[in-house]
Length: 177
Image 1: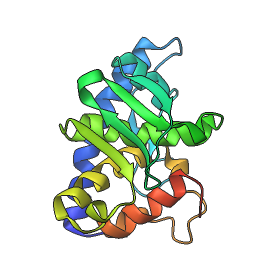
Image 2: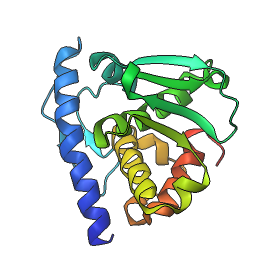
Image 3: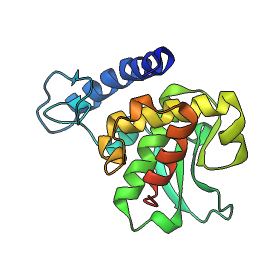
């Protein structure tokens, strides 16, 4: 793992751990201290880890399923209305929706853009600042839901370059790998 990858992963962990503690305490389940263990699955070890839906609800984010005509976009976060919009084609698939919400939560907590989208467009593939934002959102999603990387030929995702990880996570979130 490169030093930069390790630094970014650790930064995401520092942001995610208190969120899980806070939301976990608020939930009806008993909560124990949150611990990250390097190189193991799951990456978050906890008696209770809140779901992405519970985290969104705790922070006042609404989730709406809508018709999205751009085939590259499957979801987006619109900060001004505190809403995660998800393509209606995933409305009946709560597992994919949960992975999408985990990614959009990454944008909510990791960057302050008014609009962030989970997509596979040219900007997210080639603009360095967009690659980094997607990378951070993907790390957030993976740490919250390690099963996103299940079944990959190389489960050591920390070693992937940001560009490669972004491409693989996009496919894994919508289950096309």
